[in-house]
Length: 127
Image 1: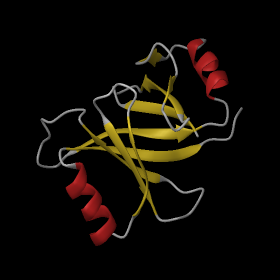
Image 2: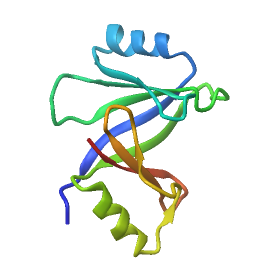
Image 3: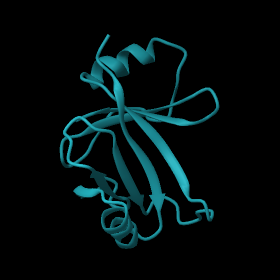
Image 4: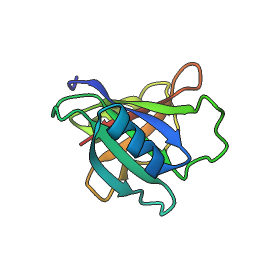
């Protein structure tokens, strides 16, 4: 089995600029990267505290503009060292997949989503 850890928590936001300013200027995160999604609609920003093996915060804009006052946590991600092996392994189990294939982002990160027992989204993620 591959080494696993929680890689990041994704939070849907309506205003990316305001959210980045809040998390960097007020909370103290560092902006580690900002990229467009391959679908051309969603934008992602990754924030952290400068540690290479830390759990990051991922801000997601353009996904859903109907956010409640509390906001929405979109998913949590589990870091894996071999995304293809995990995809094959989970396909052999009774797991509900939300993606038909592995997605590769412009920065080379790769992922797919499965559904947990309560409908929560779990992302398997490889840097």
